[in-house]
Length: 540
Image 1 (cartoon, rainbow, N blue to C red):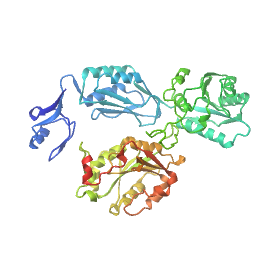
Image 2 (image 1 turned 45 degrees about the horizontal axis):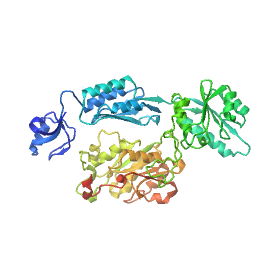
Image 3 (image 1 turned 120 degrees about the horizontal axis):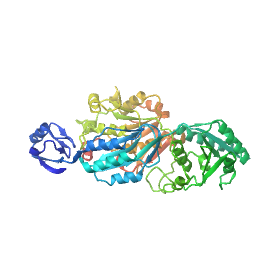
Image 4 (image 1 turned 180 degrees about the vertical axis):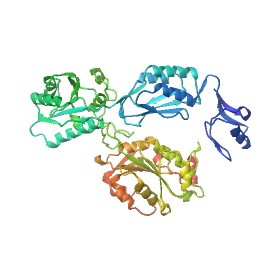
């Protein structure tokens, strides 16, 4: 590939390296220059452009990405179309993603032009979650390297998606005198939540005395009831593979395969079998919804991935879970944040993009229409960020210059609603959007149309923190302690938002409901930066 300054006389068919704004049009990066584009460049006074010209043996970026994607595809994994040399791979079902890390490393070492980035091995995913992205870095890839990559990817799977199976699970909860009823109930409920999040069902729990004979009899009853997996939540922690609960599995006709694991919390898990069905004595931490080693084993078993003693022994790297926080801060500085179950059912949270304002401080420009360096309108960037997040549906509220906004967003999978009284201020567009949301959404992430630096990853961090049952019903981003946007609101606040009047948003409600507010610290200041004056546009 030839890259660099190219005379217009030699530029036909070349690929433009950088976006150029001409008086009559914008030529975007990646444009294949035709006669019309070259004439427009000449009329604008350009004698040459920085471009890439393909040579024999070069494969254009989209073709190369397309070929790699076809080679890596496996059942239950979907793909997007190739664009700018990129193809994303998506889950078609809930399940466990297995990744062959050495193969991915070998692929990425073939040639700097070819890259594959994946989620970690053993990631729990939901339908439509992104599993991986293939990216061809320059405008073309060498044909030889591409052919080797295709052969590697077709020869053995770089990744596979194992769907969760609807297993029937039997649970024995043993009791000791004086044990609080709430402790037993919480343990049963935490187990039910885990099982149901993985597409399984929990048979009526068997409660019995913490004695080997009683637990064994309960396991036998669950076997008769059709249990395909056996769990024992003992009243006392297991301290040896010959302890009360493991001995009960053996008395019920089973075996013990492994005791202990290098994961904390979760050290005292005991793994065995009754017939062909997995049987486990759970560590005491399984009574809590917080992630522990039991989750790692349970996820694999539900996905049909065998778990042998050697697999448990290899869980030590990354196995220190006790102090993990979701935010990237030193442990001493990070506020305590509960970790919920990894396989928890994703909550349905909508993204509401406010695009109705009159841009009075930027007049005569409409700031939402201002293009960035790649030629994308500001509102388009905000909407694309929302679409790349897990929020669904994405709804846009229009008002001022409604037709222009709708034209810019045409073709994108968004819902549109119009605020007839947008001139009355921010509350009018906010209320129009809230009123138009589907009835089954559990919350809404309110995005401002002039904040394009809030990335999809930031949005997903806010979505991940949302848990009304745990007291996290209003999620607010911060940067170095300063409050930012967007804010996520649980449905319980919709009525109060609909009662707001004037040119104000809902921020003041956070003070009224401080007990339901949770702050998520971000790594950069994108959540603070809006573009509402012409002076700020120099950074856009």
